[in-house]
Amino acid sequence: MGNGNSREAKESRRSRLRQKLQKFRHIRSRCSRNSAGTVIQRAVTVEDFSGIALLTLIGANMKFKDKWLACVSFGEQTFRTEVSDTTEKPIWNSEKKLLLEKNGPSLA
Image 1: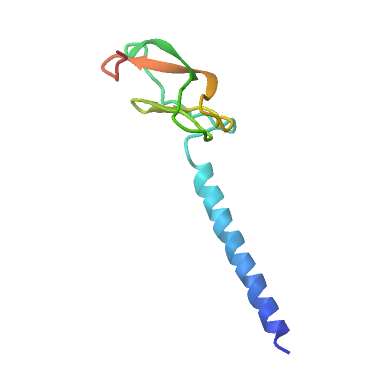
Image 2: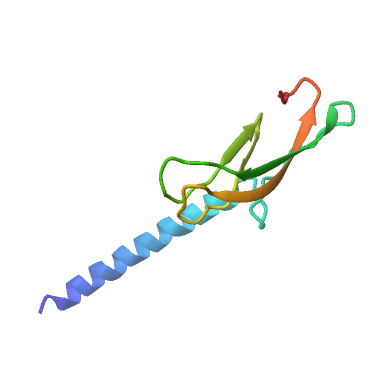
């Protein structure tokens, strides 16, 4: 009886959802990340290059148990660690390289 119409509505709803997901994937693929998930940096001239700093995120002491991650922003460069296991003392041992520029953000 009414099963034919509800089946068509369900399929069209699926196709609409599939189209939305394809749009989202297309938009996301246009971001400035490569296939490994790292951000592609803009080119820096030799005159503006000041050096490279190595930042090591070892761990933290938190007040309660949960899954943790750490984010570091340095100018336009943003990095995040992997999500830790459920713990009060997450340990990441994560190393990030920061590009230093003249007249750019500075480390204290």
